[in-house]
Image (cartoon, rainbow, N blue to C red):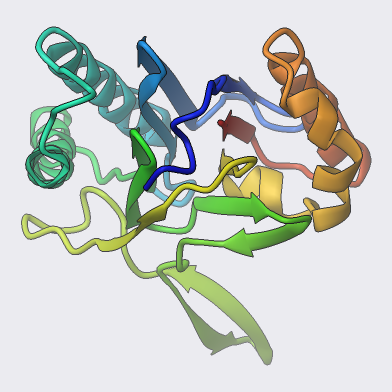
Amino acid sequence: MNRLKRRSRLCVGCKTYIGNTRDENQDSIVLRALQQQQKYFVVAAVCDGIGGLEHGELASQIVIKQIEEWYLQINSWIDIETVDIEILICHLKDLAEECNATVRKLQQEKNIHTGTTMSLFMLVRNYYFIIQVGDSRVYLYREKRLHQLTVDASTTKLKNGRMKQYLNNYLGKSDELWFSCENGEILPQDIFVICSDGFYHYFSENDMRQYETMIRKKQRTNEVCDILINTMMERGERDNISVGFVTV
């Protein structure tokens, strides 16, 4: 618990891009951070509208907006040094349920079948917590190794003689929301990557090793987002692409 008591620095950045082949961007991303003395509170999320459904961009946009509004509410009263992390986690779980209800309401109001993934990340002091719905992802880069923290909510089925993956959970699928959670302690030099599938298809551990130094510089984190998004497109990615970095 004392590892982060020495002077620390938070570096964050995020970008989303429509890509070279899509007519609209169904990804949405948010990354907000608060510093009080040498303690931090960070909320980040990536939502990817379900491509096979209607108006996935609306679903992802309204969820990201709701997450940002939640952050601003917490920001108005939080004392990072003393806040009870378990209470914040309860609030975050309630937020996930409320986001699902919002997407279900959108379906009813517009008479559409829509939905979105959600990878929701929270950092408080030296602790992280993740809520996962769908197949966007959160990674941890620690000691030169890249670890996938989230589990994709997908299943593999045989179709026309080929094995294909299908998403089996997302916001808006049903009134009752199922989500998975991950949590852990943050160590010095950790880097978290929050991204949509358009980013991670061609993303590798070597990319992190190549750009690690730049990611750790406040003035260059957003620049790395642009560089890596362009790199994914050069490697053949055809989907929308979104990525965010958080490092202490």
